[in-house]
Image 1 (cartoon, helix red, strand yellow):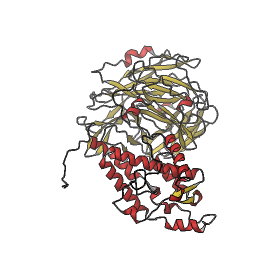
Image 2 (tube, one colour):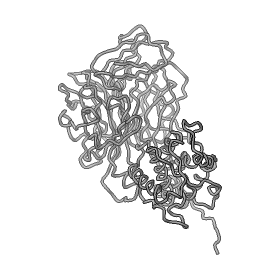
Image 3 (cartoon, one colour):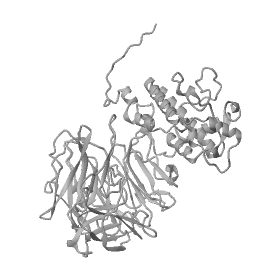
Image 4 (spheres, one colour):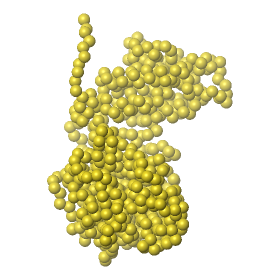
Length: 637
């Protein structure tokens, strides 16, 4: 005799060893709830006014298709949660079956074949039936009554594996099991069916994978108007964790995705941009180091691997990349975490700073680089312990002098962030002065601050400094943004939104973006703690004037306009140094592990118009006097 009893136990969402917490983590629950489950409501995808009417036999099948989509979808989700509660293994089995069956339908749709239609009747709503029986296919591989349907193999992982198996299953269905199904031609269904099947199977987004991912960015590397994606990954040598997804996540290298008409294709091997020798990639930058109009790649490798070697890849066209690190004079022992890129010596070519090793590299003639060893003492870092790391960096003009200053963020529980003011060139070398205390930044932040960005978040005309630390009060996140207060004796002055004191939290990355297009810069805070989640923070500051500038190359400049210099002046005073409102260089991948849009944003307070000068990487300029405000200004080469 069985007596049901309640077993009570605590769940710790912050304990990485709590298996039950892992199963019911918010990310898993959200994924189940977002499933479209189109196979449970096929009637919703039938062409109501087809060019060629269905045959009488097809009409009978169509009339039998269930239109109770919401009820069936809810039933399926309930059973998925039951399988999840049963065990992780049972849940993964069910998910694998759903993906494979979606793949079979997609195989039929993409090849203009007939779809196998199983029974859809009241049994599907009977909770006595298992989730794997509540499917469009009769006789699941676990069916106790008949077990001669082709079995579904375990451990299908990649899109290619599911596609291959789906083709095999479809051939068996059309031969050995043909009479078990009714059949409808693919043309009877709307294109939305394939889209929803792909969405559930994740086939339109191969960028979704388990990994120890770090920096990532979008950029148009092949000049076709569509952005490719480079996703860095902190790979490690195989260790003690042999189970999935940990084993694959640890060993996975960076991935380069080609944009093929809006669909991302893994192009890593063909591109040459992710060689096996490049193991622990932290950050990635895109810039045109040789001014040939093609965006090149700088991939930053961290020091937590045997022989770190950050690598510069030249874009040879056709998404083919070549390692030119040694050729351009860069040392082969550069390590770092973040990246900041800008033309500091005014030769039209990009220079770059790599935090953690804190090394600045300047462009020199013949498309080469040299390290600014003269600044080693300026950027020297004395760590408090083994985890006190300079992490993110961003070049920005903080005091309206037309010179790009440097802000550096620190990954430590006592983050001693830094501001370096650019004092101009001396013998071709930019001179930087540490003014952290003088500009109002706190000596320490009681939380790690991996990422940093300089943006005018309140659109008052002065750039603010954001570090990826925050206050969390009952789930309400207040980011650490030092507000610009104007100048005092030529120095910018900043104030924090509240007194700096514990407890504070941090987010490993936090790229900025105006996601709703209202002219106010929002933030996406990236979480990496189990049981927590990432946040999209909408900027609700009072509305003020603004201008965004985007540059498009068509001939000699890269398509994204990366490296273009944007100067904004008071209206009617173009080019006057004292009338400068702001200066930025368009760049992406700055800070730490964050990718941004190639857009320069300027807050303008209550101004009605401004003068704008854009200087391209080839030093050609475009002037736009008396430009109206609160819009996106497009400059095309």
